[in-house]
Length: 133
Figure 1 (cartoon, rainbow, N blue to C red):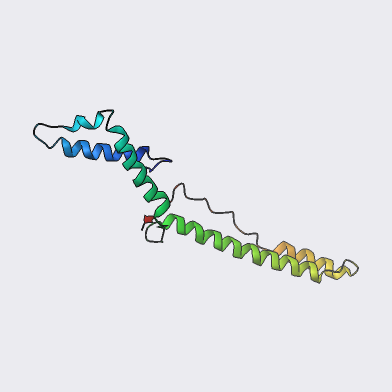
Figure 2 (figure 1 turned 120 degrees about the vertical axis):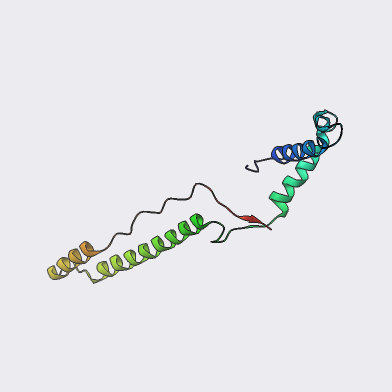
């Protein structure tokens, strides 16, 4: 279940947890949580929990929690390094090229033809996983 963008999911979870607890009573009293007079109380609790989770908590991710995300980051790092190497080799080819000297044009063309174009950007994961501290 996703947290959502406001307190609604937290309030609903609190309401359902209280319903389950009250239904253990004899007689069951879980339907009390549907009373319109108590709804603002669950909304307030939900808002507090939502703020704790979204404002006060520190979230983090590590390879053991989310290998797909960290594999993606590693792929991006590999791509950036390959792009830097490509850029350096291309820059060196241009620096060594003197259009007035035909031999350097041939060398330039051969050097550029041998450059390895970096592979495509890795696909980003569709979701992230982490922990709240």
